[in-house]
Length: 613
Image (cartoon, rainbow, N blue to C red; front, side, top):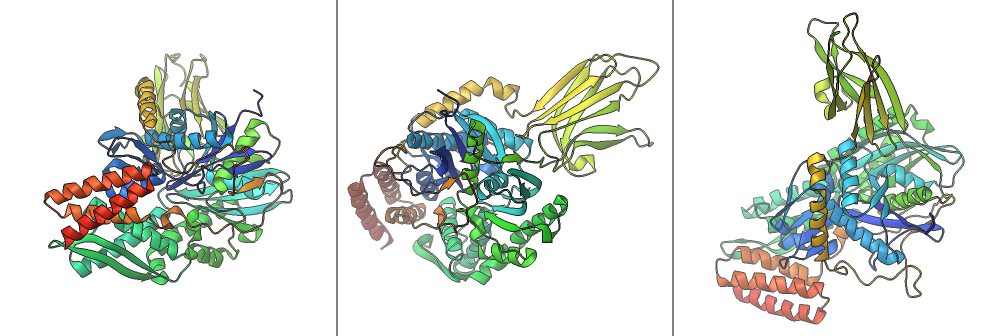
C-alpha cells in the first residue's frame, strides 16, 4: 500500500459531541453512518450488559444515569475514576470507547481498515490532558499521528487557500471547553500568534445554570427539589437543553415534562416558561469570561483591534445570540461562520491528516506553546533561600521549540540534583502545576567551584515535552519525556486494559447508533454532509443544524422517562413491572423492532394509567 492510500482520519473528540472526517477524492468531508455525522460523546452499558455509544447511550441517561457516562472530556488528564454499571474506568478508557466507535464509523464509510488519526484538543489543554488524549487513541487501536489545537484546526478549513495577509480571531465555544486563537495567514502559511482558553467553560455550563434556575422555580412552586433524584435531574437537564437550543431561534421557550415527580403519591408536571432575556442574564457572566480571554489573546498577539480582519465562530455554542452580540459590541467585527460550526474542527483535523499523509493540499501550520514550562530553582541571593520558578519555554512560543540554560549546583561537593518540572504563568512557584521530576546522579565532585548543569527543554508540535540535564564537566546526562500519561504502573496494566475494552466493545451493537452505512464509493451511498475542497476560501453560510440536544425525543423515550419517575415513587410490585417494560422497550428499539416497541408502549401506558389513577 502506498503512503497516499493509507487513510488517516481527523477526529474532533468533543465534550458533548464528536465527529470524524477524512480526505476523500480531493475533498475533506465528514464521515457519516447514515445519520447527520454527529456522535454524542456518551458511553453506557445496558441492563443486559451491552455497550452502547452515542445517541442510544445519551437516551439511556434519563432512565439509567448510573450505567452511563457523559462529558468525559472534562476529566481527561486527571486521576478521577468513573463508575459505569458498577465497573471502574479511567477517563482515557471511556474516551477510547468513543474513539473506537468513530474509527468503526470511518472504516465503514471508507471501506477499509483505519489505524491512523489526527485528533484535536482544546488549545488550553495541558501536557497531561494532551497525553491522556493520545493514550485514549492508542487504546482505541489508533496510531495518533498528531495532536492539534481545535481553533488551529478550524483555521485550516476556513482559509486553506488564501495567500493575502489576514489576521483572524478564531472563537471556539464548544459543549465543555472554550478556546480563542489569534491567527495570521500569509503566503500559504497559517501562524498562530497567541491562544487563550478555559477547559471548564462551555455550553454544558449554560445548561447547568438554566437547570438550576428552573429547579429553584419548581421547588418554590411545589416544595420538592427535582435535583435530588438522578432520573428526575437528567430529565430536567434534557428539557433545559432543548429550551436552550430553542432560545437561539426564539424569544421564549416552554420547559415541560409530564410526571417529572410525585407529591403524596400524585404525579407533578413541569411547565415553566422562560424568555431569552432571562436566560441571557443567567449566562452573561460566563460569556463575559470568554470576552476576557479574547482580550488577553489579542494583547499577547501584539496586534491592535484595527489589525484584525475577521472574527470566526467555531463550536455549536456560538449559535447563542448573546455570544454573537457581545463579540459584535466588544470587537466591532461581524462574527460569522463559513463552515458549519459543528464540523469545522473535524474537517480541519482531516485537512492536517491529508497534509501529514503527503497530499500537497494545505498550508504550512505554525502553532504555539499554550503554557509556559520551566523548572524549580533556589534563590541563594537572599537569606530566605526562596524557591523560584525559572521558565525555559514561554507561552505563545512557536512550535517546535527548544531552549537550553545553565544552572549551578548548590554546593561544590553535591552528588546529585533533583529537577522538578512545572507548568504555569505565575512568577510564584506554588501557583504553578508540577508536571514531572527526575534526578541527575553521580555528579563529578569538585572543591573549587559549583558544578554547572545544562538543562534543555524541547517541546514538539504535539505538545510533548522532553527535558534533559547534563553536567557540563563530566558529560553525565539524563532526561525525562513528559508525554506518556501511562506511568510505569499504567504501562504494566496496559495490555489488560486493552483486552478489557476490546471485550466490552465486542458486546456493542455496531448499528445501535444509526442506520446502515455504505462505503463512500458505493453507488447507493449518499453523503449530504459537508465536503470542503482544499483550495481557496469558502464564504457560503453554514447549514442551520440544531444540535442533538435540541432534537425531539422519540415517543417511547418520553414515556419511559415518566415511567421511571413514577416507579421511583412506588413501593409495590408495580414498580418492578414498570422497570421491566422500560428495559423491554429499550431492547426492542435497539433491535429496530418498531412493532414490538409500539405494543410495549401501549402496555406501559396502560399500566401507568392504572397506577396513577
